[in-house]
Image (cartoon, rainbow, N blue to C red):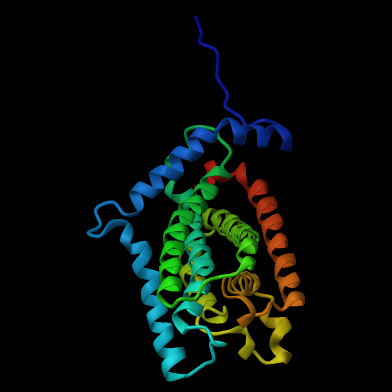
Amino acid sequence: MEQPEIVIKPGMGALHYWRDIWRYRELFLFLAWRDILVRYKQTAIGIAWSVLRPLATMLVFTIVFGKLAKLPSNGVPYPIMVYAAMLPWQFFANSLTESSNSLIDNSNLLTKVYFPRLIVPAGSVIVSMVDFLISAVILGGLMVWYRFLPDIRILFLPAFFMMAFLASFGAGLWLSALNVKYRDFRYVVPFLVQFGLYISPVGFSSSIVPEEWRVLYFLNPMVGVIDGFRWALLGDAFPVNWPGLGLSLMLTFLMFGSGLMYFRNMERSFADVV
């Protein structure tokens, strides 16, 4: 007797797709947990790398920009100013790097079974949140060491983190989809991360940017995120440029929305191309 043919296909329409994401939530959690375990597997110091990288960057920026270039820190200890910016930037950079390669790294899974491909780059962003939380504990220790405590504005920090999450996820969706079609992007992403570090206010304050360059400067969505983190954590020393923040927020939503649309349009071809 001839066996019936089984065809695996996604649910039709956007509503079914989001239902499928909920149905495959256990796979999402499994992939995220696997990536957390694999990231530091067979490393000598393990998860401590998530602490050493931002600390090393903070030390270099403090010496180069704070001691040698003597850039202003607005009355805040320079290490705290830098580390408060390193939190969102490191989260963004890690998310971008991990999610851009996520579909390629899971190519065997993509070609064998249907599931919403969106959960693969989403899992990479969740993994980066672990590093973010560990780094946040280190920042708390630095602020206690320097006796610099935040005020009530820290309650706005989750809103700026959500902005960082949307920017990271949106850019990750773009790059993960593009990397499947154009493998050159595996070389482009490290350059983008390195270049972005120097055009974002990580080692310096936005106050040093000339007024005539402000509009162009805030076209980088991470500028608004970093300035928001500093305002929430460090208070009046780093006032927010609200028009610039509004522009960064608008670009963040645009990047997330367009990334989601492009990813969904390309999704059905991933198994054939990867």
